[in-house]
Picture 1 (tube, protein in one colour):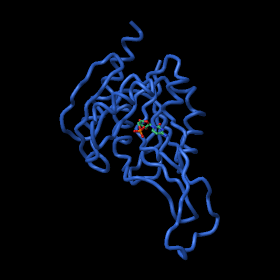
Picture 2: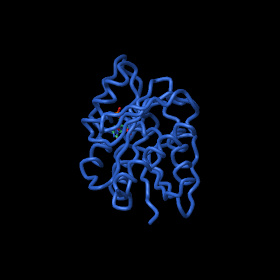
Picture 3: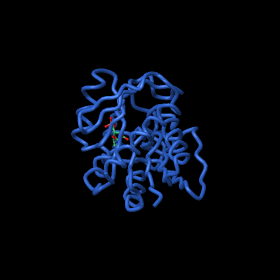
Length: 214
Ligand code: C5P
């Protein structure tokens, strides 16, 4: 039977008032490349996509759910988890959101404006805790100790695989990642386009899936 991959992609936006938000520079390019590769390899794909320039076409085999905030991303993931055999958390989910949202535009009449933030739900952690037989893969973007911190996230979030990247990856057409696996293996991919990286990631996912059926 055709397997379904649920993917999160792009940034999330955490609105402070009607026109201002907290976000990051994620372009959605990696999520798009993974979606297109997965479709070429015959998977069905559900993409929960944050706002970015990268467009993903909806088709019979590809459902695109557009969201804005991490809370909306989490809700869409929870609702669609039952349809998925594999989850890939590509999104650069905003870590924090404002404690309160101002319905009116905040006036700039203070020299110092304090913004109180609270942590967003860790979506991939929730997925891994409820994964059953699903394969769960994530990304880690680190500015220092890339492998060490990615390995820590792999373990803490109970993932099957994590893609460790440096900060030059964000918005770029290329990346130079190392794949880390739950069994302790490491695979350096070398620098290449996000399409090349996506192919390598999907091939590794296919391998993990095939071990399961052995
Ligand atoms: O932000 P962090 O480095 O922890 O991201 C690592 C992985 O966790 C990524 O795959 C990202 O999509 C996922 N994540 C998530 N929900 C969050 C934060 C991160 O699913 N709130």
